[in-house]
Image (cartoon, rainbow, N blue to C red; front, side):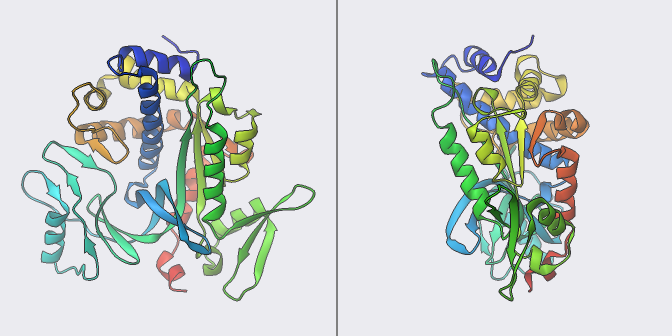
Length: 369
């Protein structure tokens, strides 16, 4: 069975999964938004960035730190890894982890301990679990990563549903503007447009000098560079959008998509075909390997649910394991679910490569400047 659009698929979910709710279509739409976020998260995991990801953290604007913006995902530089082995049953709490760290003689002085639980007694995993936070770095779970507070990349997910009788979502342009504002405000690499429409990049150096050239040329230079002046406050911005009914396609840009494409360094479009394939294999005609993930989804959205264990933050442990395997085994197919809208002629492997190069920078030295 195929689906002509995500809107059609939303109606199928409303009838088969969310029929018990007061507004089944709206509930299905919210679930679709969650699925877009989860696809993005597990793509990052399949690319090997699990230990660098933070979720829903406050990101200060460049040069204006009093204003912060929560972003879905940010990638942070790792300062230290420590593998520990915990013996005994769950739950695995922050206290339990930090007590083990203390016993190994690793100081966490100056860190504020959190009350987060990495793995609950009901086997619900907290992704990117912060177990202690400090003024410049955080200790986060997967148990073994100490990550720098400074980000080198962010991912924002935007999806807007269509109300009955409407051709596009009423909040589409507002969401586009919100995403565009964040994308333009958080990185030291600023965008300046000339009267002829050409886009130039500009970075202020600590000497007060301005360094500028064509935007894509400067972006490429920064990613390839080890110059601390270029890297210090640079953040690669990535927008993830979905739903053709609102955003159109990579070949047919409407106003909203144009606003986003000129604001993010990368804008990638999750196609109807890709989202429909994932939902079909997860929920409607489930792949055998994804049964634990399907059960976690249905348990989280049932009428008598006790706890949501299918979100970007909280995920059932077995669901997380099968999703990681699914995304890792099908990485090439899943990358094909996305159209790259910006930069022109960009590819998903190229985005993955840029993120890997940024991850490998000497961030400790960069931030000591």
